[in-house]
Length: 121
Image 1 (spheres, one colour):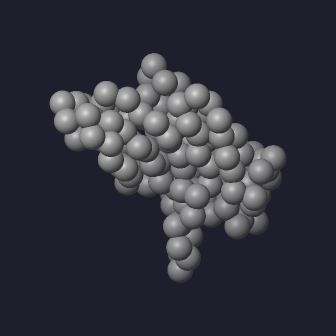
Image 2 (spheres, rainbow, N blue to C red):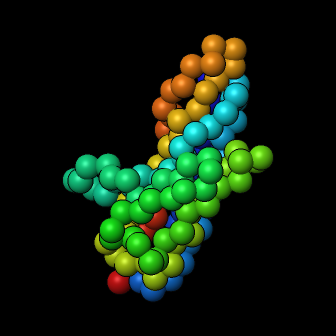
């Protein structure tokens, strides 16, 4: 099994910054893509940013230029630096990873429990 634990959420004023972190643990052989999704009240969960183990990243149009995703493969962590936050960024943010596990060497998709980000106007 693989566990993803997020941290770093909170309340911030519009224009402020937050940094989210996610640490993966468990019977991990390797991790391919890692990413962050978010879900606002009454809306579907959406991709915010994702990064492959080679470092290639992609972002939702709504966060390009404001958010930066990064990962540390050795530590099995992925971070999301969020700048110039807007009230529309308010949501629960979820860590996501495609991990290959030991001993089966099968790849599954895993989710964290989420961390709340609230941006006040």
